[in-house]
Image 1 (tube, rainbow, N blue to C red):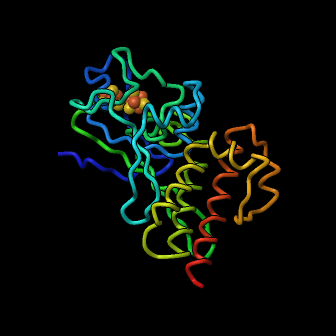
Image 2 (tube, rainbow, N blue to C red):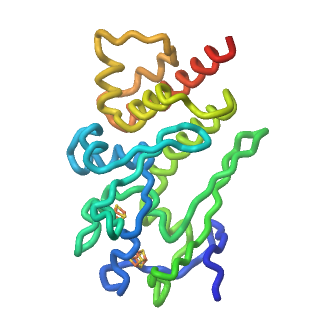
Length: 247
Ligand code: SF4
Ligand code: SF4
């Protein structure tokens, strides 16, 4: 039996094609546990032309990361018996241009390691062969790099990696999990960015969280820029929590 997980390099090739013609079409959009990153939420709410708050309310569930206390946002099932994605239809994914990073990356999985001394980041790739996925039979050949370019994953990974930096910062600053009140602030800032925008730029906004004013020079009306502001805000917030705890 073939190994279900095969490590790959950027120039490694693999055979895979997914299309409406495969007999398993849509199978991977069932029995789902689809975690969303803040950037996934941003792209989906833009595509669906709704506010982040409305998107989160209609399509997601929130839980807590057991080791960090960070918020975890997952898609709520469209059909809870089959655990289907709320966006799957008979003709495929109805949010395809804004599908989440994990849907784009599949059948690859991506990991990132960071050199402690230089801070240099290295990507690691693996091919996941699941028995229900028939895209490997008669699939076209491509390299990992070609797949990444074709699926337009890079912009997702760039900002998703900042989320890993946030979790790593929290772990360096203090052990244990975030308190629920802190988790709620992190959730609101990173995932409900329209609410974050309204709060941060309200004339009545008062805070003890100070962060680089250059960050605030970014375009607050641009969601992508705002998410970078939110991530910097959360970094400053985590440092404030750590400073209070050390007193
Ligand atoms: S977002 Fe689209 S591709 Fe991803 S699981 Fe849902 S229907 Fe499938
Ligand atoms: S199971 Fe594999 S081949 Fe089938 S639809 Fe999903 S990704 Fe495509």
